[in-house]
Length: 288
Image (cartoon, rainbow, N blue to C red; front, side, top):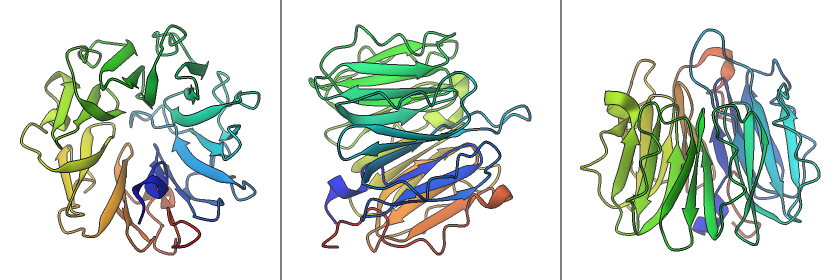
């Protein structure tokens, strides 16, 4: 499978999961209390993102974002702070969703934001030359075209201390930690305040990473999956997965996209968030 067809093909949030099919349609499973799973009418989508949040009792509502082939953006779900007010965005090439906020990467390397900015997570107006974006709960990470990382937002756990990172090809942001993937397959981590989710120093030959609330996962070149951090609900029980091309870490669950377009899930099954066994054609191109 072309790696480009797996980018943004699966997303895991607080209590729901999202998958992008090769025909541009979108499927979702799990909690729909705010309408975050109402995506079945979406068409010509090329990437999806889901608003992950920390797994506290006072959280649960979320939102889903879809990037269309024409550079416009679709949104569904919780919009209490304007995180779904993205319908006028144009020229977008990538999207990311956090807790109550959304980022969009423009084709000119600038970034637009919508939603909660109380902690500074939406202060991205000065970012330039950005190639990728990631949203955590209260912070944002940008990957520059030169392979460096920029960050804004809450830094209470040191999750913004990414300025020294170099030679990056990917970034991801979780509850209180950040991940950076280097060109040679190593995974850098910042934040966590002692959280085992940052125990990625020994990882090698990694091609994609995803940060959840308290855990981190990575796909190796061999199609296997590495995991670190909290396994409170079995979200790190992914060691036996094979033929994986992309992963997504939620608050308490993990998704893995296989080369045949099916999806595996591990972790908390409440609300049906792991009910993905019937999904097919996820991330696959029209030619397969």
